[in-house]
Length: 184
Image (cartoon, rainbow, N blue to C red; front, side):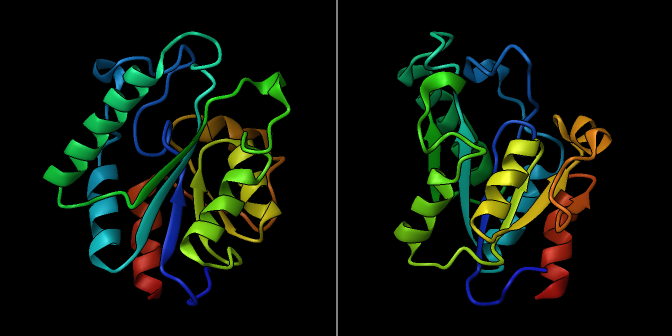
């Protein structure tokens, strides 16, 4: 389980916090929280965790949504979290397409490295929750603890079986949060 050095957790957004769509989440109306995810974030927040989101948002590069739409979607998420008693301390996103060769698009680890710098934390052992292989590979690359949830693309990722051997698997974010809090 994660190191006790820092109470930081990194979450992917689509498929972990909210329902995912193969057609992308393009409007606030399309953003729907996964049952229990907002409450899980609230429990982590109240237990002293700094909750950070790191998400690929290639829909921007593809022209499926613009920055105003992304900001409106994230604002809806922040408001919903506040109503549940939680909050996100920071939100990092990669707006680039898969062929952009940027360092921030997962599975590359630019976002997680930047999170470590911004929060002054060695990412070793920091829980990083995702539903796709690229989330888990990114976590492993910085020494974070990869955690797979079976929501979103998680069932497919589990079936493919190519994830890092150190990956811990949970049905959803609520179960992952409960396990972390039980270990504190």
